[in-house]
Image 1 (cartoon, rainbow, N blue to C red):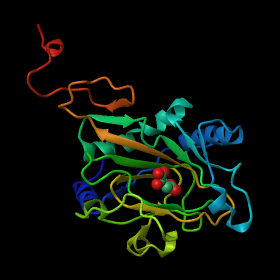
Image 2 (image 1 turned 180 degrees about the vertical axis):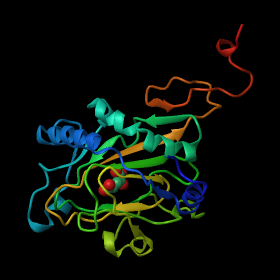
Image 3 (image 1 turned 180 degrees about the horizontal axis):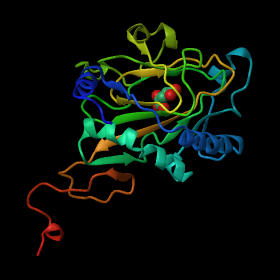
Length: 253
Ligand SMILES: O=C(O)CCC(=O)C(=O)O
């Protein structure tokens, strides 16, 4: 099932949608096994938990995996999850029939180990950027206790320029915290939001990790003459061209 028209309207208005269906348990189980192995074996590229924030209780975060980067290259199970029809059907309702997965944006697993520091408030893209969708696919259930993502509804439409990564105040003291809503998610859940939406995540107060995939998708640009881009995987539809003049190699003889 795809999104309803009402879901899409709410998405345009609020900037996010929680997809009703979940990925199959068996697929989530395989994601979990592979992720555990990569964390256990500390397979690079990795972003480590920062000691400054993680170590507020005197612990050292330098050896603690915060994020596994470049997941699409790590194991085929990640591409399988990223291109599951539950995610792509919902994206098609938002982006249209031709969809690309970007491998040079996001493409990571947030491991968020127990005790991990907040993810500071940020928006990924500028308001004037071509719309880019962030998709979070949850391996573990995400709760208030383990630091679920918080979103600021409608903030992808604020017509004012403001820093993409506002600095200065602790997570819970920033004014964006007061305008945000928490997004608890089930294991296998799929959350889609416009990457220009302000978001962040609180400290993980549980003792276990809170793992989720973060992915980036865009509608394929029909006017882009150069079609082959090694950082983009077309995951639905086709690499079409609409424009003029039509490049010679695309003209049928
Ligand atoms: O899942 C989270 O904790 C934060 C998600 C996020 O902002 C990211 O992965 O860039």
